[in-house]
Length: 255
Image (cartoon, rainbow, N blue to C red; front, side):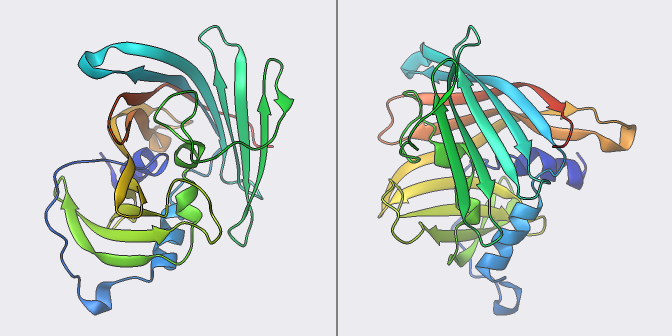
């Protein structure tokens, strides 16, 4: 897998989980400023307009499926301002709810939310709460923590033999969500997010990791991309696990 393809595959949702070695202290002259490192991670997000479609599958122990939802994600990170829309549907294609996020230059965001069929404007929900009794929150699905400020680089660990910066980023001031901070593992050279965990104090609330990727053919042979195919999300205490499975990735006209 080429480096650029790995970046495209992991930066979209961005997490892997595996056994890791104890944190090591990197040399002072090699430690990047955290806000600059996070800006570099955001720069890896795909710039071309894309539409992703798939399903959320919730399983209890022994792999018993208890619910499924379809979803569609319209990504326009190359737009000014960057924008993404996340729509959840039932398995018959009926709209359930949708969240649109626009990222402002100063790091803020504008949100719009809708519910029902047809979708109608509604108050913004708790962005940290599980969506539709899954393990996934809107904060996780939108990767909002990549835009949080004021973090610090704690050290380095290896995940699947990839050297990573371990980063702790506090939740925005005044946030009343479930997370007080997140801990992220960022590939040392490519600045790609490999793992993410949300905490309330010292308590682990949620973990996300990628299970597999798929190849998506571009307009020419040099434009092929590797995108996330399966991602697992685990809430704690563990009662179930949610898989986000992408069935199709398609380019879309810029707006």
